[in-house]
Image (cartoon, rainbow, N blue to C red; front, side, top):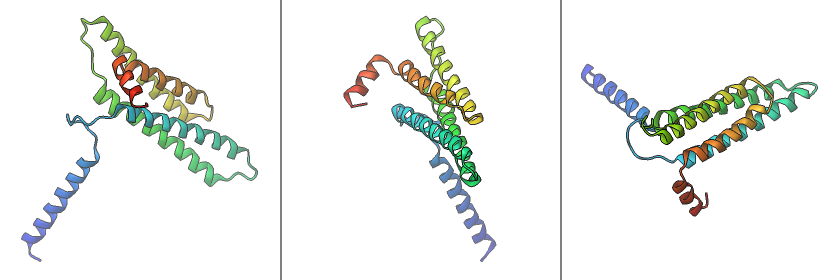
Length: 166
């Protein structure tokens, strides 16, 4: 194989790798493909998984002898789902979806601050869920995601979602 062919193969591999990495990302360019309801559902699923992991850790901790392999797996699972929840909150909602309000519009500014506060609280509770086997952070996450849903979707959007069985 010649140096020219080697360079061509290398360039092709680099191009494929760069393209593949871009295809996995969603979406910090204005593509217009968003599904906010799906992200809320994913957050709820992560909360359920964190809760299941937490209760499993507590239950397995009581066993004699302790099954450390399963304990480690549930701890890792809880951590992973808390991280995924935090990723949705930061990369999807904070980075792309929640938009700053016009400071002259007091109602819009209040709504914006409410959304930011709820999202920040979700990040903190997810962090706390990673640090403990108490269910209090999980219960707070459940309440927060419900509050965020109410604060994020306007009346018209909620009616539209109801029409479609959501």
